[in-house]
Length: 302
Image (cartoon, rainbow, N blue to C red):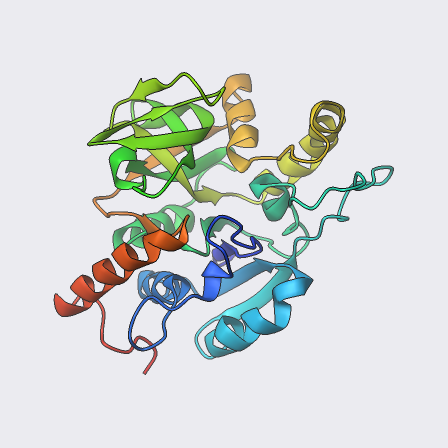
């Protein structure tokens, strides 16, 4: 079996955060969240990584992260560009928004040839998540069996604004369905979501959500490819400037068809992220606390 690849989605420009949060320092030694992710991944066994970036941030990203990681991993780069579309399709005039997580992973087609995991560059997932995912990907299993690390919603929301999450329905340890909610706000230990910006529907804090930590066989790349034109036909007609091809949508379609299954990998880790600039302080405090408890060394790569 081919060695699993860790695919890291790092092409986003951090519009709500206000900068390149992929390379924003979260400790006194200049490490970004991605440093902790890669440190955990290496300890778990990952040896190959693929960074999904844009040409616009290529040099700054390689200088801050990529070239340092070449000492520890087999590193490759995949480029998510707006004009990377099937033959016969064009970028709508005025479109600046990326095509979404499904398109980002689709850009790995031809570069990733074995089982792979997918993460966001600016999310802190915890060591246990990487251990569980690497073990899953190393096992022989049908190409139609995928995996997802699940987190409790209350551990993934912010005090500083709304977030988007894939809310999961689980049955016998497998994902039954996933619903992408694009505007969720914290409500104490729970949350609420809105679809119209006015009326809010409560969500329990212990519901399982996807934080885009997935495990796939190479078959998923083919599924993303064959389903992309249908998405474009629909999305370009309905919302040409902002429609997004979400990775969970494509997984969910296969669940509904009965053509794939998604095993939920439960871990007791707390997720941390920086959707907004105001989140940076709480992330720094959490990292400092983990270093103080000996979970991470003072300097990760020395």
